[in-house]
Length: 201
Image (cartoon, rainbow, N blue to C red; front, side, top):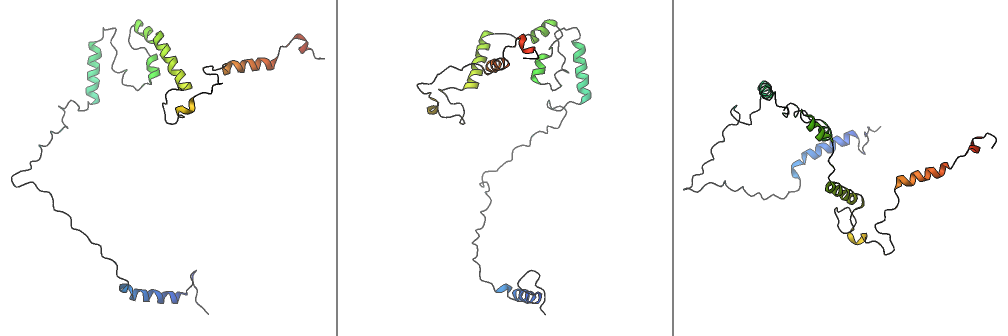
């Protein structure tokens, strides 16, 4: 009767005998190449006549006299209260407390900036400068269409590929997609007359 092999090709006794014989011949393996280690170079020391002085240590910034020292909540509350009290009668004064809260830019433009109605009205009414409107339209057109003469990004095709064919209609964008959709829906509905509502037709 043979002993179990435990998933190997040898029995437990044969495996034990191989392990013991390998331990006996452990130090008799082939010789390995020796690695040629080079010693590290010495430290670079200053010349005998040159005394290497260390720079003076920096002054400690952890002092309350430092202007960058953080302000305690009590000190800040007192400073803001004194500032608001001093500008109590100034209608154009904007409280520094309003600037503390993080507000998105689009909401910040909609909020009134001061106490006067003139500032409130000026902040809410958009200024329509013709030069700004034209520049905005040109930038939007360039963003939508790109340019045949300049390549802004590497992901855009090379300029040689952008030259239109001689038969192509250059500069004609065609009808607007929204207008085409409205016309398609109108044509699909058709013109309904009073006869279409009669049940026997």
